[in-house]
Length: 323
Image (cartoon, rainbow, N blue to C red):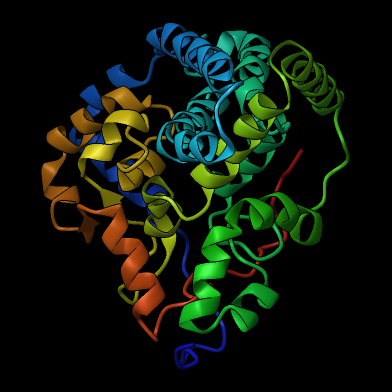
């Protein structure tokens, strides 16, 4: 269904990512932004409340009919679980406990991971740091789709399927693009997750287990919040690599929509990114921006010039350092 997109390759560029130079320029003009580079301990209590909200949901859905279970998994559970993945994003930057307690953040990330049903937190941290340092770099940044994704998901219908299957591609892509040796923390993350999943099954039953996993799959697939996956870096306008979203869903996604601000200042927690924009408004107001993630999804699917190939990509310089 739908004609095949015209793009047959990524947008290869031979310039450095824009965020380093813009960060340097903004800090020279507005050094007060450095005062925003500090932990956000409020994240601890917010994440704990989100965890218990899902535990309560496990109890409430355990005797529901399957159709109502799936309804609440999409309407409520998906929002909480997608929001929790973005809480894990905040944790990956060490915002809850600060950089001097890095290991505390790793343990807390494993705790935040539990309602998702699948181990995620530790691996995400490792690959996400590469995404910031080497944005768009071939063979390193696993946020970039594979050539197969760009080649195959090239029609309207296939792009819808690609969006639905985003959780699958984000989990498998690192194995093909940039496999890393499994760390001991990833083993602990996996063991803790399996134990929690078994507890959920034995305490609440199979329906609660299905609700937990369905909430994660729904939330990361064809869902309004998932518009941020495409909005952040897909090239809707030639030459523009990163885009910010300033709509209301930032309220439940730790301001992940402020994505230019985040890449410019990855040491500033999400709650302070609107202040970055306010302080340096002349830099951000002129950049392309969105106010609707739903519209981003619609445009991506319906526009024959857009596909998984619509990403800016760089060749590695040979000096990259990775864990």
